[in-house]
Amino acid sequence: MTTPQFKQLRRSYGFDEVALVPGDVTINPDQTNPDFKIEDHTFSIPILASAMDAVVDVDFAILMSKMGGLAVLHLEGVQTRYENPAEVLAEIAGASNDKVTALLQKIYSAPIKENLIGDRVRAIKKGGGVCAASVVPTNTKKFAPLVVEAGGDILVVQSTVTTARHISKSLRGLIFPELIETLSIPVVVGNCVSYGACLDLMRTGVHGVLIGVGPGAACTSREVLGMGVPQITATIDCAAAREQYFKESGRYVPIVTDGGFRKGGDVCKALAAGADAVMIGSVFAQAKEAPGHGYHWGMSHPHPALPRGTRIKVGTTAPLEQILFGPTSVTNGSQNLVGAIRTAMGFCGASTIREMQQAEMVIAPSITTEGKSWQMAQQ
Image (cartoon, rainbow, N blue to C red; front, side, top):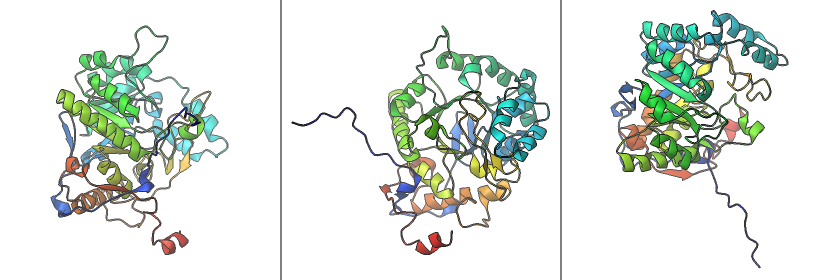
């Protein structure tokens, strides 16, 4: 007698388990076009900086915008709880490992000052930057109008897991079609990892979806909650949802693979898996201009009862410009990310990100170790 299976598991893949296959035709890297669009906003590089306090402040957002990308400001962190967030960030960076969690819980228990939301948005706009601001679903209806009134360009509604259908005690929770109808700016939502959830979110009318649950270097949701899908599989599944929605609606909704990136090769693989852009945290936390002083921490870390995330020391390695455009001074792929994107696009024969999404990929669990014994021995 055959024993029935309760659940059938399928194999999923992360960045280190796949590889790109060079195309039959190659293109000069400088002739590739890695543009990325969110509605009427076009960015010359398909890279976003994560909405995390150790990564993005007003100055970093302005700088990232001037370099062609987009930085998302966390509107429920130290930037909106304290008049002088730089002092608080320095205190977090200076705390000992055994005291930092309690310190973060204390710092993030301070109330959000709503006047600072407008102040931070206006500061980014005054500096010539495109302003994207992130809020959690619970506070979206209250804070979104403040972002729009201050001149914000893009609203990001973000939590560990976001779905279009949510059951709660609230009679009138956050309803995305109603939110979008009331706002004059694009709305990007996240995070999700499955075909069904992504398709449902796109059908609400959102303008972009963030992909990834728990892959970030400073996030421990996968350990604490046991939840997540490796980023290559998550991206492929959500890209399939984007294509299905495009077929049924004629409206193209970009997806952004969010988290888990360590090097340029990871970024290139995410784009080939179907992403329109990527969102990066820890690599940018290493920038000289990052506000975290060489540290990085997850935004769920300060939870009063279930902190998820850990402060990690990433160090300060290079200016943001060098991380994005080189010239690189390291061999681990953590600098000149845009150069890596353009080179991989050229090798794959892709002149645009849309064409890069069609690049062949193979399952290759030995791709980072094959023939690399000398490199591994010297690490």
